[in-house]
Length: 181
Length: 412
Image (tube, rainbow over all chains, first blue to last red; front, side, top):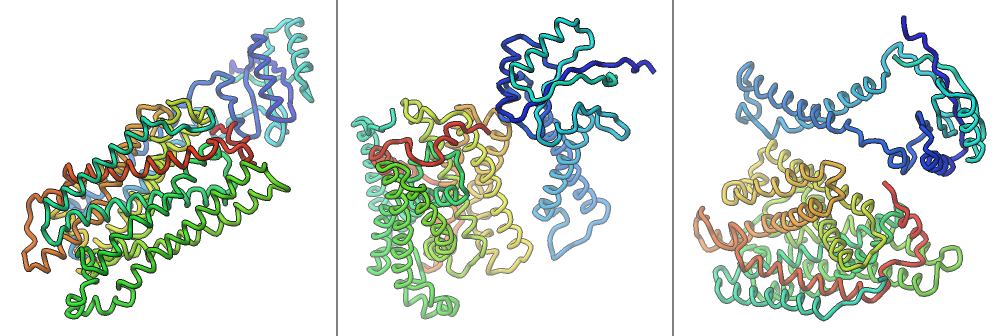
């Protein structure tokens, strides 16, 4: 396997989201190359600060939803007009109002399930996927900024450490993780 | 600018709109005397119900948001305070209708005709509710109670503006009690009111979802009008702290409650369609057969268009798409009320006159004509005049509302 290369990550933990936002702002103005930011909950305004592009997940959601609509409506139409026409309550075979609730349900189901699995796939979360966690408290109450320092020289690493100190990080550490494929 | 100046130019515009409305109504009355001036009276009832409902929704929105400890809406809360005070003029709008019921000026409600009731067993059975006394008392008593709450909440809000937050947020604490009290009163009392005003136009028919449906229609229309008003006032330099984030949230309300309205529309339709009971299906049969354009157009304007236009994140923030969908939805729900109110009295009147309900186009009933649009413009001018004059009475941004700071930093 050629994914044996190790990646060296320098990260700092902050105690609250305001501190994190200030630190990201400072990193931007110092032109530091942030690898990623981790937080236990979505922080308002962080996306814009990091300059992340709007997620395209909802476009996928629309397509899945439309697919669900067509599947449900098409299937019921086929069943009740071609495959097994039965009269219910004196209504015509092709009774559109009766199809609407199921069409709605399948639209929601397709959109929800499709978006969930798309999100897993995009985030590389599949069975057996290893996702290195920099520090367990990132999933609890700490906010983290991470830098990739694999190819950094001593001076650069020190500069980043100074940055963490200046912005009030409560913990600074280095961790080696398996590089993602 | 925190103090709205109601300019003479705006006043002139609103007076011209009101004049158009008055002329339209007079013309309707004079030109169309059929069935005891039914076209005029249905127009008047239609707009009185629609615009009074916008006022009620102003009170409901304030009550709900204050009770839910919401903060984001505070920068624009004066708009809904102004809406909610419209319940008083709304009550005045009902005086001619109530007087007409007693004095026989109109034949909107066939249950008000004792000769008809004498030959109708169903109406006799319903006469404990559907009679002139209950109509009169319910209209004025319920609107009066709601106005009391609207006035009290406005007074507390203005008191807070003058005296500061008070000891331990005294004013806001009182406001919260009144707000919480207003919610069940709006919820439960709107049922008899909507029954008497709208549903009893076809007194043999009934639907238990009708009240939610009507309320949702009012609510969406009120949100649409709020959006239009905010864009207009922001363009004039008022409401500087209403950001794209606030507009985005109003867009979500418009989007979500358009879907909610559709949900209720379809619920009511499907249950009646599936049950297939003659006394229930008449309502939809009449509308589908005689008013197909409005019947299907209703779903297009009030569901399909706002659903597709406002689905994206960005379209809920852009002025163009928001104004477009707000105008569509506002007019759409006005048409929705048109379709609720017009067909019933016409069919009843034709039945009474011994005529066979003829298909084909009938101006002012099948579709709104110029006179109906003129009446809408008139009522809209009246509503806007009232709202602007109330807005100009107090600073637009409530300086001492405890949630103001949260609203200023609102970020969705």
